[in-house]
Length: 279
Image 1 (cartoon, rainbow, N blue to C red):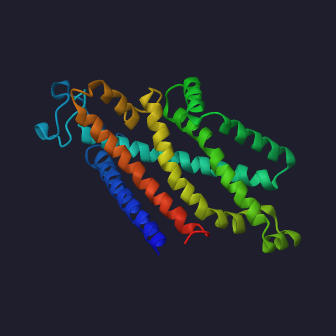
Image 2: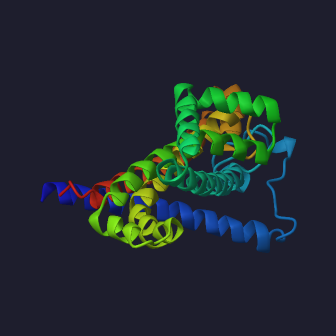
Image 3: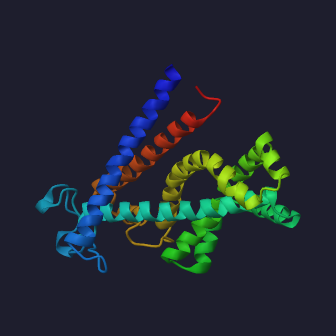
């Protein structure tokens, strides 16, 4: 009973925190693309050197301004939409590649199994941040270069999960019977395997979102991000004025930390809820 209450609490708190961030992101999207700007030319925070580093509430700015005189609230809002957008894109692409590779590593030809195992183990041998830095150094700073490097370091985790679930599902009696009567592997994949792995995979995607946000922020902090509105890039800027305007670092850190905590709480709660060995 206590375990079930803990799981429900994690899902409730994680979902509530994430819902607040989604409302914030949608509100800013409407403001920047329809009210203050257009869909083809969205509004971006404007700089004014005369009002740099204003404290919270100064001259009508709720959270103050940064070193370029841009509204910190608008910067955080733009960074939230950027972080959520890139993390969703990366996770969906990485999951798609992982599903295909994981499935083929079990049901495909022998050379595919060997090649996928070698590639997955090779990526896992090296720290993902080092691989990401190498790729960004080779491709240069760009949005799609950042997406590419995060997908490259992210898909092996999904592939290992899909591989394990494929081995489990393919060993079930009714699946073996379906194979014996000639049901194609493609039909088995869409009608049996995919529905079976989606609950576990969705949990991994939720947890993966926070990992992508952290990785993207880390690269942005190191100067290898794909946008100046990356929270990591903003933190890199804010550390230069830490003593002058500590509120900039505080607001940035709390914004990013709250989103990551919400995603982790929701992911952990869903994982425990869907775990057949749990409560």
